[in-house]
Image 1 (tube, rainbow, N blue to C red):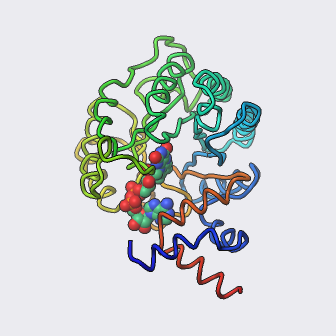
Image 2: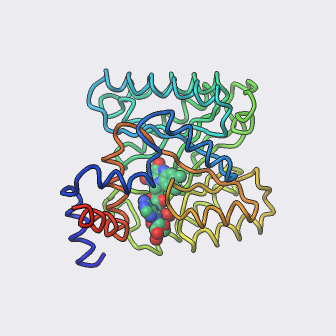
Length: 315
Ligand SMILES: Cc1cc2nc3c(=O)[nH]c(=O)nc-3n(C[C@H](O)[C@H](O)[C@H](O)COP(=O)(O)OP(=O)(O)OC[C@H]3O[C@@H](n4cnc5c(N)ncnc54)[C@H](O)[C@@H]3O)c2cc1C
């Protein structure tokens, strides 16, 4: 990151909220579920599926965790009623994992049970490395009980190949799941991404190419295991490699998917759809849009530059 970019990124907290809001419109569907469902509908017209995420993490009170659990259950009902092609994505720290493992697990069980009832897949987002073991354990337990649950693995973590080897096979229940969930009852559904948290070198690859290389090793291992992989990246190098890999294996478009964040590289997303790949867009929304937007902007100083320019223009 250049010195100018570093200065821009550190000045972001000084930017007035309405100005951040102008730029955030690209990355966040809005403050309400209605805003988010409208975004999902629009993406659907473009040929993309979605996964809905209510913004919020590291919840500090059990009441707040219960409130978010309630919001997710209500959202599942709305997605079902609207007949939209969308799954949901959940951060366990939002459901109380940071307070206690049991609370996070119990609230997630409630969400997964509701998701099963509505025939909607739910993916557990992966947070920082202090939560990896608990998250994978809760994923295993819930998948066993409900099916229809997916997890995320991060290519920057040195442990990820081992985590792939330890993934569970089909759940023991053998119970048939409705509609879209039927496929997820078989192979594990795993979103593979680079990873977004700042992690120590002892546990995480740091080099840009080293992370890419491990991403490809993990993708190959996941496909070898028969997993349904959500290939979550905007990196053109990885998109090319992954596309070649699924082609080499002769996989059909319903045997994997690409995933991207709302507002990020929409032209690459459209190219993938045109080429016949299934693409799912991560659609975040909620009252906590401001913190999320600042994080997105920190990751992409060129967009931070637009924010500062907009502020100077408005000011
Ligand atoms: C659907 C989805 C779900 C995710 N879920 C998780 C999760 O559960 N846990 C987790 O740790 N991480 C998650 N991530 C984030 C991921 O780990 C990466 O941090 C992020 O995708 C950037 O990596 P990249 O592979 O796109 O490559 P990069 O090399 O970082 O990006 C490639 C190009 O894409 C553009 N770009 C990438 N990210 C952004 C951005 N945020 N804003 C603007 N432009 C951008 C830039 O132009 C950049 O040059 C998710 C990502 C996606 C797409």
